[in-house]
Image (tube, rainbow, N blue to C red):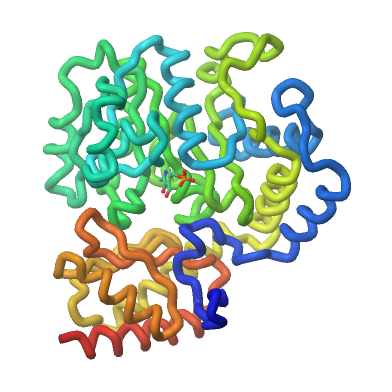
Length: 377
Ligand SMILES: Cc1ncc(COP(=O)(O)O)c(C=O)c1O
């Protein structure tokens, strides 16, 4: 990356997780250019373009269900809104179980189910869905029972449970194995639609197409965004066919849509991105490269880092001190590395580089990080 002043950086944030396949991949750029020659805008739901239909079919084929249906949109927050509405259509119930620390976007529907940092919600609190039950997040094996006990006693008004399979913005918080599967059982028992927010974790970021499935959970709805458009704003809500059918006859007026949803340019970019992920075998690469990145970090015995969390190329460095990540982020910026602070108390440095980042570049980054931490007061 080159900034407005001409300084060069290695981007270990992949632009908030978007550039999973790298920034400006030539195959994506070419697909956008070709599509721009053909058609920039179509009549979304009314007369969809062929690329939109192709993308919907492709996403359904990637889903973990024998038959799926999908809705396209522009942002992660759009995809989560569609998922929450789908759950209401399917169950008729307004309640949602969400998790402390969860981040699902900032428009009204997703904000109401985001447990991350009270400061995001506080000014709007009185306008948010009041039927949201926040459960505890288990960071360790001992915390699983407590998290399960914090689920609602009465599920009669609950229509959806929404979860990030790994909490990203809250600091790459990985739940213990078995927790997601247990939630799946509870949801089935109570007829609740389980929404996996895979906007950050999906499409290979965690070394699998879907982190929820990799971790033993088959959800009912999957939200995908960020990396999907290869740099253009494209997102989707994909669901089991039976759940999505609750919207009724698709030939009737669409009661959830927006002018630019499923635009041809974004659809072409997304199809090219999915091709790249498949052709370059990036899902498997994410797994092996992520492990090698974590090993390089472990070997460096980084001062002030109490834990290294890693699943695929989603990594979090836990700092002992609150706000520790802010100073490190600034110091790394001066050395030409882009990283992001995460965690409610900015005590985690989040590393979500393009899957294609070379080991040599990553090793140089680890050296720079080591120097920054050694120089800390
Ligand atoms: C897990 C998750 N869900 C939803 C969102 C919201 O996506 P967007 O910022 O595209 O609205 C994000 C963004 O960081 C996210 O990480």
